[in-house]
Length: 144
Length: 144
DNA sequence: TTAATTGCAAAGTTTTTGCGACCAC
DNA sequence: GTGGTCGCAAAAACTTTGCAATTAA
Image 1 (tube, rainbow over the protein chains, first blue to last red):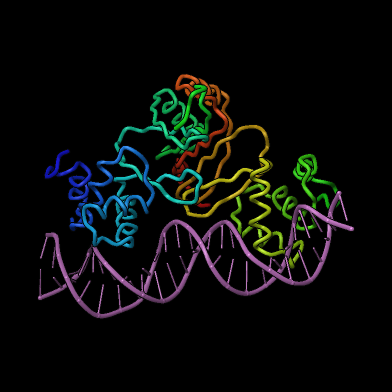
Image 2 (image 1 turned 90 degrees about the vertical axis):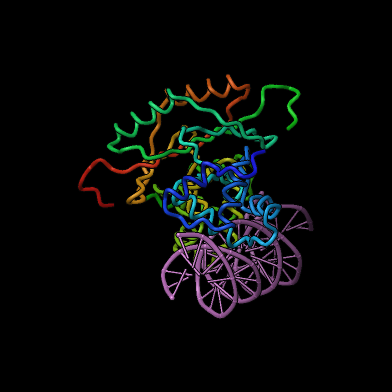
């Protein structure tokens, strides 16, 4: 779609004082354009379409950098590989269809509020959370 | 404490038709006696105290077996290693102190109910879930 | 008895790292 | 210019697997 525009994530990185190399820009764009939750290999594959020279080591290093700087979130869906998505500020959760592997994102402020309360009651300040629902579809015709 | 008594997890395994070898009994006991969330290496270390011959391959195989049979739960706290705990039937969640690494377990039926509702509203049946809260302690003197 | 399980070592996966060349600031 | 970053290949970390010997039922 938009080829030259600076992505929000790139702006984010610059604000945090990161040196913006060509590779980092490519990886930022890949994440920006992804609506799913790609693993490292997939991110590398997508990045290679924009810069065929980019190495997997750089992808690993850059994802760790972005994650540490909190511009992306690292996810684990139990298959042994890390997955990533943009940190879009608004807290959201994941529903996984265990049959098809499909991932549905959802928000719920009531849950947000309740989790904050729970943490406080236990003597903690909530900094972040992860909530994954493992489900099967109720639709009989579900395939993918 | 109780040396000869058959642990609940062992009974569980027998009921599921598993062949109960000495190694499996040892690993079942280790998990039964653990109040924390040990990783594979730690489980192997604890098992080795009861049977110094036990191999890490057997620990991996047995944990996978127990997990598949649903007598234990596999956890991932984001450090790249799998951790395990008994599946005690009652659904519970984890609060992680990000400074000390301490893990607090808690239950909350209101959350349980809300998650079921959410899944239903999205057209799914909830089969299982994972909820981890990442927190910092409000107590100024927290160390460990 | 015999099919399942074990230990060992080798191999598979995923991720990190040392190093000399290179680049953003 | 120079400290940070890159690609590469090696290694580290975690997990699985083939095979011959052993064992539970």
